[in-house]
Length: 287
Picture 1 (tube, rainbow, N blue to C red):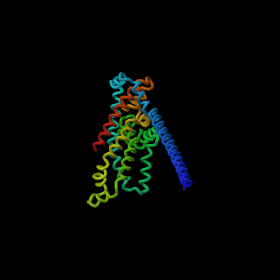
Picture 2 (tube, rainbow, N blue to C red; picture 1 turned 135 degrees about the horizontal axis):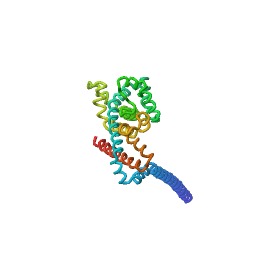
Picture 3 (cartoon, one colour; picture 1 turned 90 degrees about the vertical axis):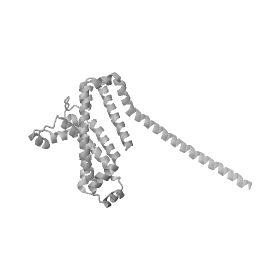
Picture 4 (tube, rainbow, N blue to C red; picture 1 turned 180 degrees about the horizontal axis):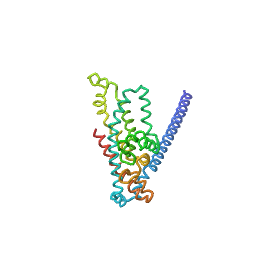
């Protein structure tokens, strides 16, 4: 009896030691993961947040005021806002029917090929996009030649800016909205069909109102891409002050002479983008 009791005590001690060892190993792993997470957050802050803070430090309040008061800067910002707004309208009007087409005939070969083609601009280098637009809509291009016959010039005009912005930004809206439509329950679609609504009516009156937040998110993503467009614009639309010089092109121009002035205008654009971002978040929250 006594021996059995001693063995039981020894067994319990060994079990406690094993549990303690497992706990220590688990604690060490958790500590290691927490350390890795903290290191990742610190690295992220250094890469993303520090450059933003440096922009404010380099420009200063006086530089920001000067950037806003400068007529060339004001012109460039206005062109960016004006063209990107028109681009956004185009993205919604043209992109929404494209999403309907992609979601209605998912299994068709044409649909799959079309989806791949319209998604290419998201990964295409901007310079390549600029050359493609120039060859297509330039004076000697396929579409450009036809437009030139009726005295419509595209290259080096605000139209070229809008086309460049649309080319690089539309696919973001299409992809976001398509993912949202794909996530809609089949039961909702069937219920709409039972009540007599057709596929187009269901898409316009049922699905789109359901996906208000998705539509807004897709449009904002597209708008920010259009506002920041640089490569395709400079190659296709040029860098003509007061005509095609957008804010990114103005920042590029200023950087060649005085990087501090470029930083000041960059802060102005950062403030505008932040305001739009906050307004969008509030709008999504309300909906």
